[in-house]
Image (tube, rainbow, N blue to C red; front, side, top):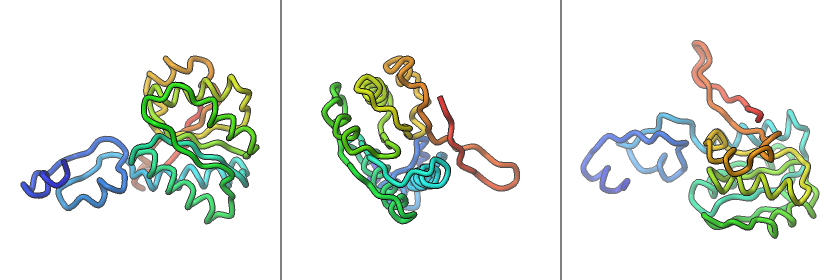
Length: 179
């Protein structure tokens, strides 16, 4: 849509977290939400500084959404001194994540970052717990989607994710929410 919006000079507001393609689309496309790169960096800093994680594994959905989260999280985590032990992607709508989750578990990272949304995130959370993955799991703001809980049920307990909140007179700030 971006080329048509730009060509016709139609101001457009994107309400989800803005990925790199949206940010680079041109002067008529705006986001009312956080930037994926900012959210990813905040999560990496939280993992490294607050959770004291030195190693991480990353799984993400094979879309620009997932790719941007993975890219920016990994870049920031490594910049801080962390090491990525495993990084992989799965297809949108995939229902059996046990093989890739087992690879995450075998690598024994300090934390696991799952860049998914909706039902896919719920499946990841549920199957991660069912195979015995007990490390902290971080995800994105989409974890607030009710389908995550509908799919994962109590297996979502302990999930930590990013939320953007206004801070009085100082613009937006990032916080980590916990289920």
